[in-house]
Image 1 (cartoon, rainbow, N blue to C red):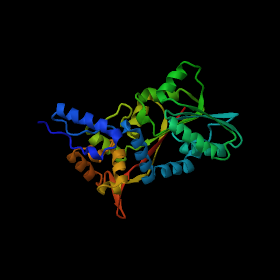
Image 2 (cartoon, rainbow, N blue to C red; image 1 turned 90 degrees about the horizontal axis):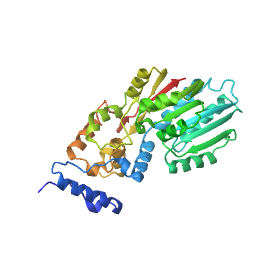
Image 3 (cartoon, one colour; image 1 turned 135 degrees about the vertical axis):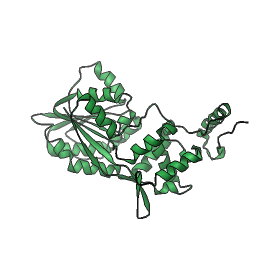
Length: 323
């Protein structure tokens, strides 16, 4: 009799029971199947919660804030020259937290000038949160907002049927992982830049622990068609191949993964899911894979140990593309 996946069905919520049964039947048909791992993106609510835990346990947004405060003013210094309106396009704007920081810097640079801020975001839930955040934010009177519930690809298809307008500033924050054809996407949006315009791209650095984790274990983790492993090293190579000018800034960021090494810790379990992009990684991963990753995550090339904590290297790259 083939060895079945070791699953505690009683521990699964009812909504996951069907997935567990599918996994068991698959194991019967495939005796060599080692685990029942599935992509984290197959469970939207768990993905959202694991992402929330990531933000709570990392310096991601603090790192972005530092960039906005220290570097962004110089980057946007000329985007609005001689213009009566500044046009900003946000691709994958999420709930708008970073978008509003960007808008505040543009307002400070160009006081009183009208700003048109259009947002492309596929999640209706995120758009609702974005609108709620705008409603609670003061000094937005000179900003006109428009939201489009669509993916980057859907936006491109729609715009190609219209008369494309030029943009003064386009930003793509932590979203290129969800683009199928990155070179074509970069070429398209670069073609939408007005004079003196810039594109700001934020994604994980090629020096981060993510790069090493994906390269070593990516083939052994469940893949999802909606997400691909890409770092700043990949992106700068693509930009070089396209002949597009850019500048790249790296900033330090960490994620506290100490709870990942405490058995039964809920926060640690959710961080494991985010790290591996695997739903219920601790319950479904083969023991040898889990042990290997756990060991590596404590090594210097992945993390640093400080004051009793294990801090994963979450370094970010900020790539500024010129018109």
